[in-house]
Image 1 (cartoon, helix red, strand yellow):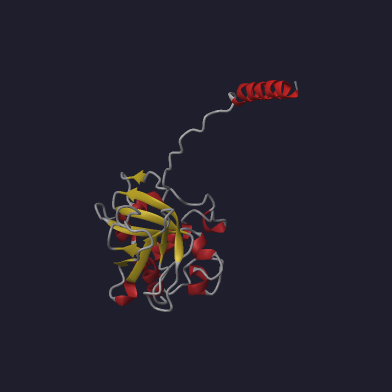
Image 2 (cartoon, one colour):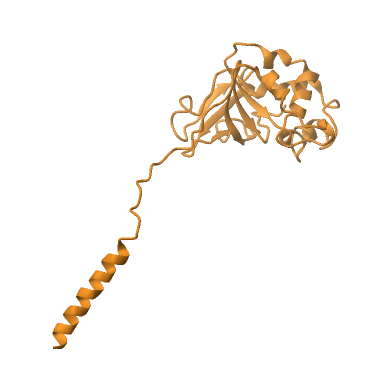
Length: 217
């Protein structure tokens, strides 16, 4: 008698399990998508034209750290507008936002001794070298240029010779790092790209929060 009751109990338990279990959703297949975002396209504008649309409302008096007021001032002070405005170029512009200028140990303090004010007190030749180092003579995309993960790719910036060498590589999340290497001088300074692949009429742009260098400017 007890055996029969146990048999009925397990039959009932199995039925309840089937009734409740059928409410569970079937796991959907996971479609892995690598972090390669569509290119931000500004092909009707040069880098210089685009920068004019990226200024803080109150300028240097109250900068938005992700705008480009200091970079615009640096380009004007060094007379390098044409380098950022020549149509048809195929170069890479490492675009330095305001944070790369007025944060501690960034460009403004390095060249003027202060984290406030403008770049007018900076040595013009050194400031020009800063800008030249952040223009790479080749068109560098995450893919296909930096094809192999964690492989170092060396390029020449506008600064001639060994002082103008720059190294880029990307990780398995497709983020680009700059000068994260032991292949350059011991004075090299590294940074990670904040925003990638801004496509302009005269090249490709990647935005940096920090400046980079091979040797001191």
